[in-house]
Image (cartoon, rainbow over all chains, first blue to last red; front, side, top):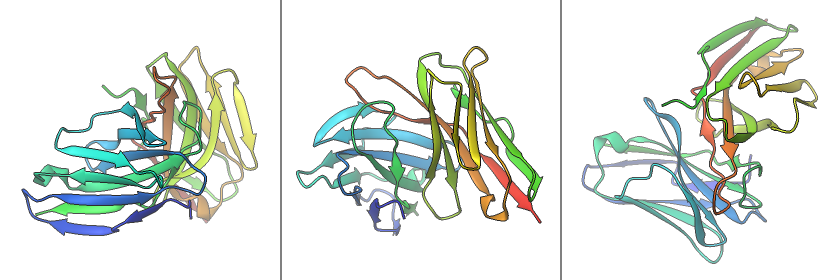
Length: 114
Length: 115
């Protein structure tokens, strides 16, 4: 158990819909990350927040948005869902924001778009 | 463009022997490297890391070697145990402007340790 908590674990939704994935980081961690794992793309970095502020951005679609709240939990919002958005979405956290800090992953949220 | 490559999708080793997992990278700006292990239906679990100022880091049965000139790193597991059977991911990061910490992952190697 990494200490990173993600909900829901599984989610099935229709194309065009919007979903929100939630993440609670490890106790004491100020930085939160979102990654997407799909069959054809592997593990891809989406976005990083540190203490409520965006720190780094990867190949995150404009239909996706994220935020980190004052209590440090984070939400990833996925809208206008397409079949290709079906993937495993991981949240991760680290103590600090910079490169070289070990990142710990949650168990992921399985999203299936039908 | 795959900046971190794990060219062996699978590896089979006998229990008690050494497992060697390899990883190559192309981005010379990468300065921190990590190995993660992943079981099915679970998130990646951190194993060991190495900074670019070192060429070796050891933690119990796990040792990571870094060859910067060849842009190559490897993970050695000695002795291998059946519980080590999992997918192993190599990951790399670089110092980003603004202080971000983005990991670029390889595609993974499925290790199977046989009795």
